Image 1: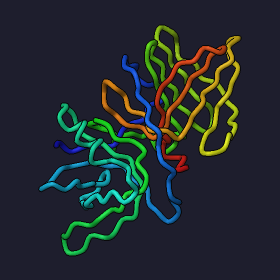
Image 2: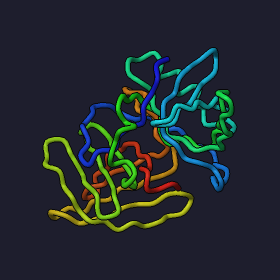
Image 3: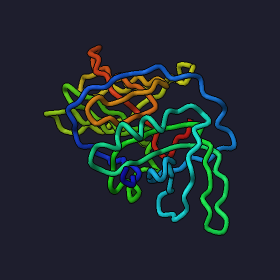
Length: 223
């Protein structure tokens, strides 16, 4: 398995042509007191190691939260490209060069990436969502969101967020005589072509027409 780097969130995202598969996600324990990090995943002697971005420390991954990170990493390992993970857990320190441990509780994203640790936009992003057939991508920040659709120019608009309970929410806006909504739910979403995993499913609704996709929180939101 090759090393992995954190996924980059750009203001305008490239478009991909793939479909998604959704899986129900079990109820998650409280994330209070846990640390969120992004970094590289490496296989070593039957163990899965996590190395945070721009850090030389290594942590043995213990999947105490039942996130299936071992299976997700194995599914991606046979494909070319580095592996990246965005996760939250309890990190124990590294002393005298020994490996630390991370008791993993929440997995936000696992995918292939080569330069994500250098992404300048990740910390300010709230959410990224994307889908296919036709391709679309949505980046959300505090000051607004940018929608990119295949064959159309990018659309930057303000939005209103509505909380729906159970971790679900939607974002709404009106632009160019179109009613645009993004509905998000805490449901594992796996891209059937790239194999990448995100921790939420998404539906983009434009004038009532639904397109499905995946979503994950950026660095400025930790729900």
